[in-house]
Length: 364
Image (cartoon, rainbow, N blue to C red):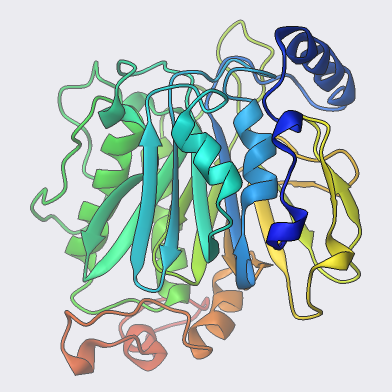
């Protein structure tokens, strides 16, 4: 998070000898004693910021889990928003040894919104088409998605994936690769596209996502593990957690988040011997929410998501209910499109007029 070139890491701290890697692995297991080891599932990293911020510090620790301090060595990906556009980097090599990942550790790009994923392949081969985050265009908006877990309804054994929405429509979006994650992402977008003929406001989108997620889990509550990050523009990021562990496994997979805000302090990574004093480089208006499968640092407060909790992050702040998202909408951080006609631009009045019971009442 937010450091200048003078604060860039010493490469000797990252490119370690085999002996040092073994030592760090043992240290990290000891350091992370207060949460389960994550040796058998993918991992997620998301960042949402109040001001443009680079992600090098957090990504450096995260990438160590892709082959050094953990076994997620089946590819990695990273995507971040620049205005309405996305820069995306994917590699089927382990994040800890990928030259592209090494570039990301050295290149302090700044963004308001970033998603990253390191893969432990369970569904689909180790191949570029199966590397998260996945991207699609809908309503003239770049949508970005990364997932950790198992989705039985969208697995490769299911020839026909369920339609999630309550309004039928065409399957405009289809998976390119073989993962249940990408199949679910496409199903989510297809349902949203069929549901709305205008851009939904953030409160309405929050409510609709909750409904679609519930339908994806319904009937498979015990076997579904659904932790995901969803970007729908430069400002906001949704994060959801339906945690769990696979049969006969003690590995528990969920989501945690921490908020970095004033007063800033020195922060230490858990996966490598690197620390940064953010009080020396950050502004009083800076604020960053960091979301991860497991905490990245050992001296910050990390909050675990509740089961079934959907959080909208905007300007580094968590919003845990549809009503709270209205504040983000009024700031102009909702969906923005140049494709839809002017009268279809985001409007809380338009949405609430056609939404039954969103606020617990009748038609407005």
